[in-house]
Length: 225
Image 1: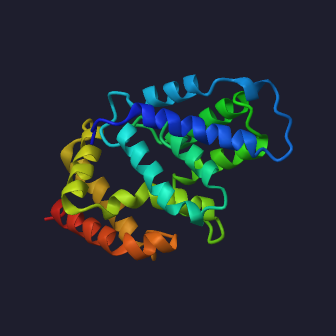
Image 2 (image 1 turned 180 degrees about the vertical axis):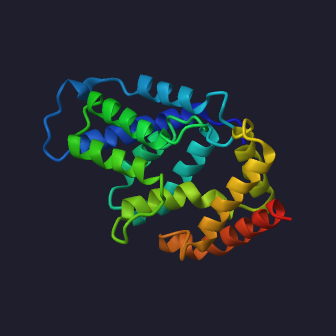
C-alpha cells in the first residue's frame, strides 16, 4: 500500500483548499496568518504521512480519501473543511498507541490558526479528526458522514485491493504476535459487521455497503478457521 503518489498534485490540493477557506472566512480578521505560506505545512504533513512505520496509513491513503471526498462533496455542508480534516486525520500515527486521533486533532488546532484560519473552522476540523476514532457521526452531521465514508471506503475495494489493505494493516502491527493479532482483528471485523450501516452517505450506502460487508465477512472467515 506504499504506492507512488503525486506530491505536486497533493501540494496543489492543499494550497487550493487553504486559500479557499481563507477567502471564505465569515468576517473574521485576516491577521498575520493570512500571509503565511501554506506550502511548509503541507510538506510537514506529507513527511508525517511518509513515516517508515506506515504501510496502509500512507500518502496513498491520503490521496485516495481526498479523491473519495471529491465524489462526496455535494453531501458535506463544508467540503473544504472536510478535505482539511482528511489531511490531518492520520497525521499522527503510531500503531501501538490509542491517542493518534487526539494528537492529530491537536496538531490541526496548532497549525490552522497560524495559517489565518478561523477559530470556528479550526474547531470543526479538530472535531472531524476526533470523529474518526468511532466513525459514528450523528444523523445530521453531513461533514462527519462524508469524512467517515471516505475513510472507510477501502472496505469496499475489489478483492485484490482489499487483500493488499489487510496485508498492510498486518504489517503496521508486526510487533503483535500472530495469535493476538488474529483475535484482535477478528473482534474489529465483528464489531463492524454488527453495525446497522457501515456507510452514512447515500452514495456510500448505494455503492460501498454490500461490497464492504462481503470483504469483511471473507476476512473474518480467513482469520477464524
